[in-house]
Picture 1 (cartoon, rainbow, N blue to C red):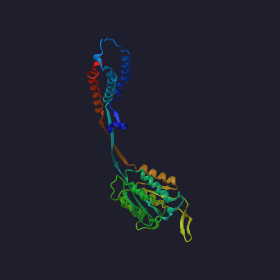
Picture 2: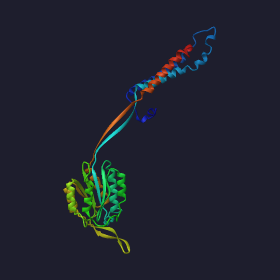
Picture 3: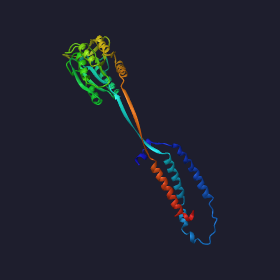
Picture 4: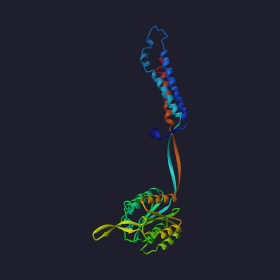
Length: 334
């Protein structure tokens, strides 16, 4: 019964049978006409034999109603109502991705709105939403590196970790080599069809136990593709700094090791990007999203359940009931 009430998922295999419903107006017209033409043609000397027939005559239209219901139910049965539901089997060749984000103090620079930190977090969150079938992890680095989230398909956890990135989380500095090495380590045993690192920095490698070139060679061994993003305007940027009198904003020269970032991308079949504003940074992530496409095969299965039986039973019941009434209760007046 629940399936019969769910009309959103009901279809008809033979809808052309609904043309039979056009017979209803004809039947009504014929019935009304026959009643109008009905006139007494028999004279009786006594009413004793038909006593009680007048009361039954008042219910005579019941026969016609039963006939109409029979036609409607039979029409629906012949049209073969079916409930359907669809199941999908999703087969995905996922990509394993690590977002490596520089969290050094210079990321507080306000050449992006409201600053580089918040701009980087915003585009990273949007990027994660665009990759529902991929496993993604998060590595942060400055003077050292740290895995905030191993590669995972649970993107809610990942997005929570991205939102919690802030200045001063780890020792200050810029260790690109450490950030890259930690990211590669997260991907060593990944089983995706490809392994990708998106490394974002606004500085030059100036500390760390692992040299960037060494980390690059490790990435090549494990066949990791690297997309590098240099973040920062050309020239100078306003950066908040702690002084004895409090936080002051000072102009500092923007220095990005573009030759190193280009080398990393070139030698791993990736690409280098330079972002000088929020819109450009967002476009860069969109470009990376287009280049790293995940193959998704969706197979749909549609299941049908026949619902004609209740209508067929209703038609039979109404037809049998009409015949019984016609030849029993209403026999003397028909």
